Image (cartoon, rainbow, N blue to C red):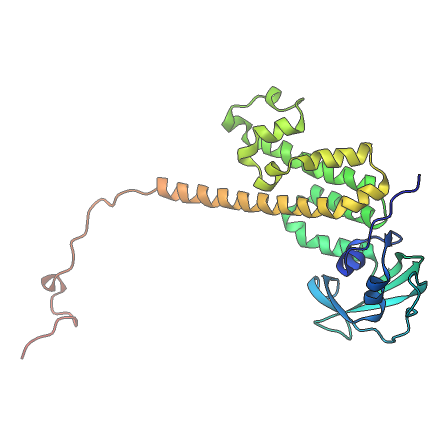
Length: 283
């Protein structure tokens, strides 16, 4: 049985989130927009090293035939960063045949852009998590979906385990309360100490496990960006939660250290000020 081909959804998804050689179904009107029309699209600029808006201005009007409902085309699309249209350019080499669209090359490469973008999240990650997050993105960029899920799941698991070890003494938990139980039960146990997005979407772990054990490479790749972005949200919430706790602990420490002054100083009077410059003498 032939594998279903995903439909083209947007220029942003195709150019900035779809790995090379992945095939998408596209109709004639959408193909006209990609190859013959000017458009703007948001994506990560590897030159600015931040999210930006890119502009496409086709150099010719004959890239596609005007009547063929399933045109054949091989050529390039250049997207210029709006911050520097002459210098910050990403070039995509595309192939279209019988209503199917592919990226068959690009510069800078999909992997380079994805890995550069991931550096924005390094402050959220330990050195071990950062290395494995990069491996996950790199594998997905090279169409290795199942392997990318392995590394995302390891990061997810490590966050859960670390949080248990951090709070088990304060909460009076035993190792038996945590180790050996299902992930849903672990999340439920730790719900007061985990990012809210993770608690509400604990099935992320089940999806990662399903990808490793049952899904095909293309099925894993199709959902990789959702999982990657979800993990980033979890890490951002976790970082904020830690910062809030640290701020609260510092305030509690300062409040606990407060002592009442030994002697309350009297309010100043004219007599106590003597003949200082603040006293106006009547003549």
